[in-house]
Length: 61
Image 1 (cartoon, helix red, strand yellow):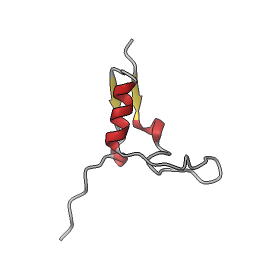
Image 2 (image 1 turned 90 degrees about the horizontal axis):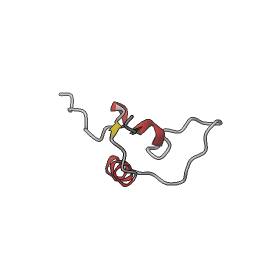
Image 3 (image 1 turned 90 degrees about the vertical axis):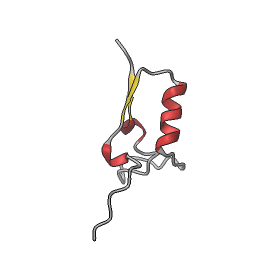
Image 4 (image 1 turned 30 degrees about the vertical axis):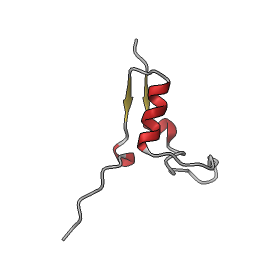
């Protein structure tokens, strides 16, 4: 079995917080910091939620 991390595990650090049931961790990370954490944990892979992707949406004309 290979271990991986889903970026949703860090959703509060990306700023996605559900009021009342979750506390703000008081700090934010970006996708690069998430990937560095995963690398430091030596996991075999990561799953990245598309809503957390740093890729910007194209501008509408």
